[in-house]
Image (cartoon, each protein chain N blue to C red):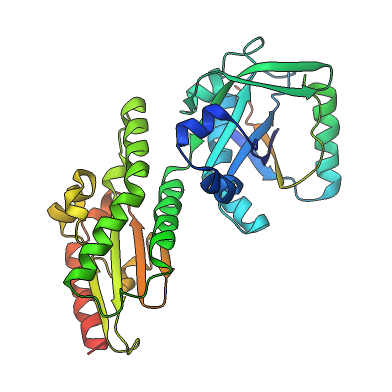
Length: 276
Length: 48
């Protein structure tokens, strides 16, 4: 039996790890949930059941949470009482262990003063949300994206990088630590559609200039020349932000999606035809 | 070895039963039902 509930409001180890501000925490804490109970019934001992069950649940947690509460889950946290457990299930399931927390949780007859804190990132969703959140922050109040232009493109790139640099650093650090075989950081593409004044007929496409300055993004953007269009992206995991004057797509594909060049270009042609 | 069933406990009756189970079996007891919560029940496949 597993029970997930709202995350701890304040947790120094976690907040330091994220490096988020009070304002960011206020806005994003709802996307963090706490695995508050994990009960393995003692009658039957099944090898590896804990880590397998945990992984299976995490695979669907975001969808279930979204369906019920209307917002995604980006990170799952849990606390382990070191006096009783070692966090073996969490480690086996690939969670990230933080330093011991200091705090007090009055529960039943026991008071826990320290706990092992584990975090599990639902990476794609975590980064996608942070990236798009950064875009919202930086561009939602600006109207200078309209019609594009070189100066504007430069602004997009520089502002974008200032906003999301920490997210990529966080991802890299965790992936290096966990020695992940398939790096999420290699599978990102950010596509920006800048709209003209006539939204229906003058859609302009830009990959954000400046992205190639980032070695992670350059891996895809320069080598694969990612030209992923709306039509193509329909079948992929994606997030979309429509600011009215610009549309931002963040695409996260698996290995097969890297080889999208031919299909993407053919659809690019159709897209061009359609939009004159 | 694997997971046989995995389901979300949707009804109040099932969640109440889960809380009773936690109260009886978990060393920290049940959780006060406040705010957003999702309960999962997982059963294991039979071990040969």
